[in-house]
Image 1 (cartoon, rainbow, N blue to C red):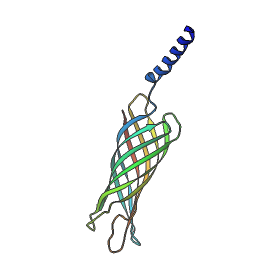
Image 2: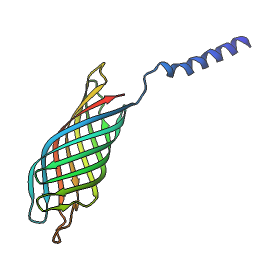
Image 3: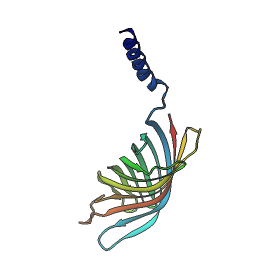
Image 4: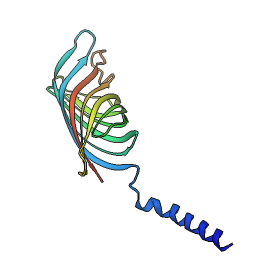
Amino acid sequence: MKLKTSIILSTTAMALSTPVFANPVWDLYAGATVGAGAQTVFADDHDATNAAQSFGAMFGVDIPAFRIEAEYNYLNETDTYAHLALVNAYFKMPSTVIKPYLGLGVGIMMSGKNEKYDVKFDTTPAYQGMLGVTLDVPRLPFKFDVEGRAIYMPDVYKMADIEPDILHYEARVKIRYIF
């Protein structure tokens, strides 16, 4: 009886103490991003494309097969600017140092303005798709992402029975600090 009890107690103690010494399966992170590309405004027959840039910040959770994050973006083009809040999901390919991923995001354009026509943007949904790679530098609490991104915002304002859509596409670099 004493042998069975000691085996059960030692097995239970080992099972309960193992997670204390193991690495966590998920990582919390915060980061910043900068991008450059172009922005096209689709308005009936009057499509206009100009150079654009973006700046952003994010906070998320990195799990081995995927990432989920909340993101803020400021998009700036020659005549327009916009503020976006998005929730993104990234699906990662298994790899060691260079990790490819595919991402999707949904959110809202909270505010913005076309300064050329002095028109404020309506609050509207925003959708985005991302394709990139993560560079995981061993022993550093930072990860670097390089990605291509396209953001679509439908019916951003109404002017003379025209409701233009915006497509913002760019190359983007992120740095993420792992807590």
